[in-house]
Length: 60
Ligand SMILES: [Zn+2]
Image (cartoon, rainbow, N blue to C red; front, side, top):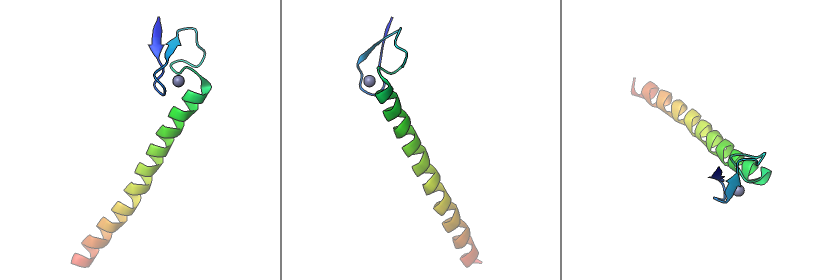
C-alpha cells in the first residue's frame, strides 16, 4: 500500500517509519505549519476580545 506525503506529495511506502510523511523533514515542516497557524489564530483571538469589551464599555 502506497500513500502520499501531505507535505511534498511524494509517494510514501507503508513501511516508512515517518508515515504518513516521506521523511522526518516533511513531518517537521507540516508540524511547523500547523503550529504557526495555530499560534496566529490564538494571537488574533485575544486582541479582538479586548477591542470588543472596550467598545461595549464606551457605548455605556
Ligand atoms: Zn515529503
